[in-house]
Amino acid sequence: MTVTAAEIRAFGNVPEHVAIIMDGNGRWARERGQPRVFGHQQGMQAVKRSVEAAGELGVSVLSLYAFSQENWSRPRGEIDALMELLSRYIQSERRELVERGVRVRVMGQLERLTPVARAALSRLLRDTQDGHGLILNLAISYGGRWEILEACRRLARRAAAGELEPESIDEERFAAALGTAGLPDPDLLIRTSGEFRVSNFLLWQIAYTEIHVTEVLWPDFGAEDFFEAVYDFQRRERRFGKVPF
Ligand code: IPE
Ligand code: IPE
Ligand code: MG
Image 1 (cartoon, rainbow, N blue to C red):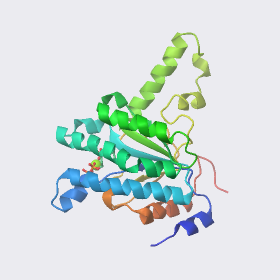
Image 2: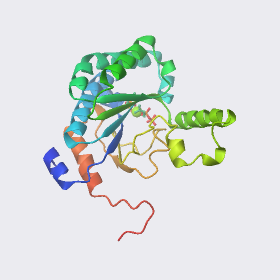
Image 3: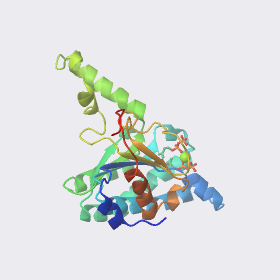
Image 4: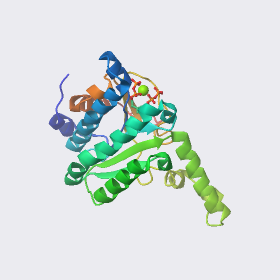
């Protein structure tokens, strides 16, 4: 199936927030008899393509799951390579992101990153802070349960300090204590490589998100795959627990 950005935009109902679990780099490399890191390198091009595709469709927020807290249990060499790739991605893309008006946000336990990766990220956040286009929300060293616990700790500290009534904690206030504060919940969650699981991504936020799983491995994921996922989304009936009319 080929569907164009113009067709998708004309249909309307473009998702405001798209989240992607970028999976399958290792398998992509193994299919080619290459080390896993080769897949991660190629995966960077897919990130670039998705950022462009999201911009073309007029999506407001693109959340990318780049590295999970559980991924810290991978072999040291793979982690080091991923950290280096992150710095390299930032270095090579910073100018273009600024030119495209992309505003980068990041969520995750950043203390665990290397100082070099952390410095590169801070600079990227600073350089893109005035962007008025796509919000690119990177989940790095991220875990959904960790994020929820962090929010609980933040609110509990305020309650203990007498600044917050426990009874006043409602969904809105809780959401404002998460890494996605101020962002709408994802409308569409894409997972590549055919895995039907959430792997600790945006647990609170995906309560009513539409899920699209594709067999395509992340390094092969292109604009047309992004468009296809959105095309699929546009034809879903979202009911939010209500009765359809
Ligand atoms: C996704 O690809 C990238 C990260 C999780 C960092 P994987 O590295 O998980 O690739 P597979 O799932 O082993 O193929
Ligand atoms: C999820 O992929 C994490 C990222 C894409 C960053 P994983 O490959 O780590 O997830 P599992 O192990 O298949 O659940
Ligand atoms: Mg994987």
